[in-house]
Image (cartoon, rainbow, N blue to C red; front, side, top):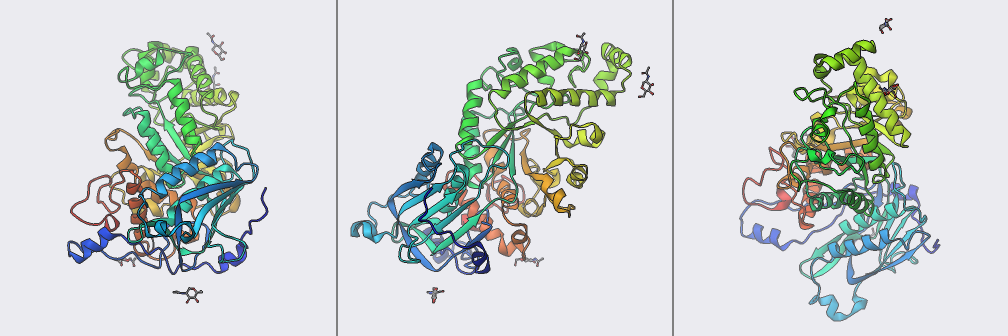
Length: 555
Ligand SMILES: *[C@@H]1O[C@H](CO)[C@@H](O)[C@H](O)[C@H]1NC(C)=O
Ligand SMILES: *[C@@H]1O[C@H](CO)[C@@H](O)[C@H](O)[C@H]1NC(C)=O
Ligand SMILES: *[C@@H]1O[C@H](CO)[C@@H](O)[C@H](O)[C@H]1NC(C)=O
Ligand SMILES: *[C@@H]1O[C@H](CO)[C@@H](O)[C@H](O)[C@H]1NC(C)=O
C-alpha cells in the first residue's frame, strides 16, 4: 500500500463537476478539409467531455499538459506488480504513442519540457480472480506536479487489477496527439476522476456457430470490448448449424463443424479465456439445449429423435444427458466464470411428439411435450449446478415454468419488454437484451435506440433493481462473419456500453443528438484510430459504408 496519494474528496468532487471546457482536438485533416471547403464539418462541441463511457464523477481544469513519450510506469500496492497491470501498460503505451515524437519540439528541449513523465498505478489487492461483481472502480488524477502540491504526474488507484485496467483505458482516452507540437497532450487538466460501473454485467454475445470466427478475430473483438469497458464475452459457441469446439469426452462432436478447419481446440478456447482475462473480461460459454443442437448429431446421431427429425435433442435417452454432462465437465476446465448459459430458447417439440419412441417415453412418464421441455431444462440445470455453475437461461424457460426454475437461475431477456420486471419480482436475477434494441444483427436499429434502452425500465424498487445484473448486446451471426462482424458490432455496442457503465441520470439529460452524438462519433473515430473497423455512427443501416466523402467525426 502506498500512502502518498491524496484522494479527491468525492463530495467536493461531485459538487464541482462541470462539463464546460474540453479537449480541443487539433486535427489537421479536419482543418484542411474545412479550408478547402470540401464538406461542412462542425467543430467539436467544447462543452462536451470526450470520454466513453462517461465516468461517474470527474472534474477538469483548463491546462494543457504534455506527456513524455518515454512515459514510465511506477506501481504500488499489493497488486501493483501484477502482469495484468504491466502488460496493459505496454498495450496502452502503444496506443497513446502511436505517432512518433522523434522530432517534437519538446523532445529537442529535453525531458523537463514534459509535464507528465510517469504513470503511477496503485492496486490494493493482489487477487487476480475475475468474477461477476469484481471491483472495477478506480480513481485517476492527471495533474502537473505544481498544480496541487503533492500530486504530480498521473496516478491511477484501484482496489483490483481490473479497476486499474479501466483507469488505464480512461487515461488513454485523455491523451490526444497534437499534430502541431507533435506531442501527446492532455487537455483540460487537471483531471480528478472517480469512476465505477453502474452494472456488474456488461456483455457482448458472439455467435461462432452460424459463421466460424477465427481466433484472431475473436481476440480483436475482445480487445475492442475493453475500449468500451464491456466485461463479459458471451460465447455462443455451438448451435444447430455447427459444432466447432473440441470436446475430449465426446471426440466426435466437432464432426459437426462446417469443415475440419473451422474448429476451436481446447487450447484455442483456453487462450481466448486468458486473453480476455488479461483485459478484464469474463467469458461465459453457452450450450444451447435442447432446441439449438442439431449439429451435435453429426457425431452422435443417437442424440437426434430420428434421422429425419433432428431437433430438439432426444429427451427420452439418458445418453443425451450423459453427453451434456461430458461437455460441461470438459468446459468447466476451460471456463472459470461462475455463470454458464444453458440456452433453452425456441424449443419446438414436434419432433418429440411425432417420433414413436419419444412419444412412448412421454406416455410412460405421463408427460406432455411441455412437461418434457421443463424436465429437460431442469435436468440440464442440475448438471450445471453440480459442476458449480450458476445457470443462465433464455427467457422462454422463465415464461413457461418460472416457479420450477432453480432460484439461482439468471433469466436472460431477449423477446421483448417487461421480462426483467417480472423476473426480479419473482426473485430471479436478470440480464437485459431486448431484441428491439440490443440485437446487433437488427441492422435497422439506429444508435439512439440502442443508447436509450434502459435495463431498469419498469423496475422501481431498489431490491428489484439490484437483481438486474446488467445487459448484453447480441451479435447473432447468420449474416455476419469475419468480413463484417466488427463493423456490425461497432459503434452501436458502445451505445449500450455507456448505458451499462455510466450514471443513469447523466445518460438521459437533454437532447442526445446534441449531448451524446458528438461524443459517440468521437469514440467511433477513436476505435478506427485503434484499428477497429467501426462503421459510421449515423448510418441508416448499421455496418454500411459511408454514403460520401467527409470527416470521421461527422458521420
Ligand atoms: C483557468 O481556470 C482558472 C481557475 O478556474 C481561471 O482563473 C482562469 O481564468 C482560467 N483560464 C483560462 C484561460 O480559461
Ligand atoms: C435414466 O436416468 C434416470 C435419471 O437419472 C434414471 O432414473 C433411469 O433409471 C435411467 N434409465 C436408464 C435406462 O438407465
Ligand atoms: C398424469 O398427470 C396428470 C396431470 O399431471 C395427473 O392428473 C395424473 O394423475 C397422472 N397420471 C398418472 C398415471 O400418474
Ligand atoms: C434535438 O436536436 C436536434 C439537432 O439540433 C434537433 O434536430 C432535434 O429536433 C432535437 N430534438 C428534440 C426532441 O428537441
